[in-house]
Amino acid sequence: MAAQPTETLNAQLMDGTAVARRIVERTAARAAALTERTGATPCLATVLVGEDPASVTYVKMKRNRCEKAGIRSRHVPMPADTTTEQLVAKLTELSADPEVHGILLQHPCGEHIDERAAFEAIAPEKDVDGVTMRSFAAMGFALPGFASCTPGGIMRLLDAYDVDPTGKRAVVVGRSAILGKPVGMMLLARDATVTYCHSRTRELSSLVREADILVAAVGRPEFIKGADIKPGAVVIDAGYNAGNVGDVEFAAAAERASLITPVPGGVGPMTIAVLLEQTLDAAERQLGTASAV
Image 1 (cartoon, rainbow, N blue to C red):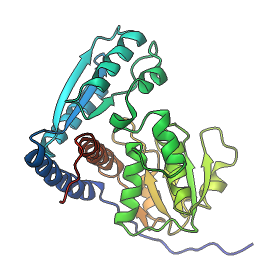
Image 2: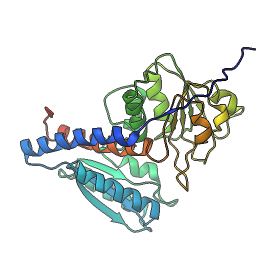
Image 3: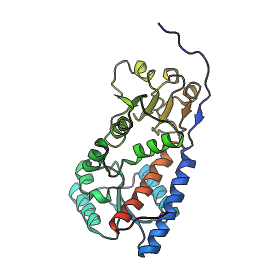
């Protein structure tokens, strides 16, 4: 058996806040240029069913970021007892509204809502959150389209820190349709060798130990143990749990990784930045113009 490396590594933090700020600043410049050329202001409609405190906070945060990026936010609150049919009707209405360029349905919407039916009511050209089946297919085939925002943000963060996935072993822990699955597809499209894992994967630790790039997106606090991180690995913690705790045992992982995202301040800001950038992209396409910024 080959000897295991014994040196302690002090990981560099991947500052998602700083990288996201640069994306938002560029988006703001493009939005101003678009408004000057066309007289139209890019608009993101945010649809919220009920008053879940976490969802209310997230939507408020996204609306504040919209203002900083020169994007108008139209908030569409709906009561907690909204039916799937009512939600689909509202999303269909927004999809047909020429003044709305992007639509964000804050989820989860409630157990009584058929979220897939709701997502599919969003016009693909306005699916700036990358949640429709058409967007998923575009990610899978590496075709033009809107990426799911968190996976898109992860890839932008890897690029910002000059992490080339080519030939690397990437392990994704999580299999959701808007995070785990698409980030694996994006890594595969960049020539990584991808292994999907989840909370029921047998011998998960042994698979994690092989990861040159680890993406943790399982939604369980400190589910990934620091002792299992391969020395020198790049660790992307896409989890967010109560108490600002991610899915990775941060302190122990930071002793072994070369790069690691903090929670908060890592993946979260990148998600919002990509949402705003894609809203501006959608507005430019719908208005038939391209930015020179």
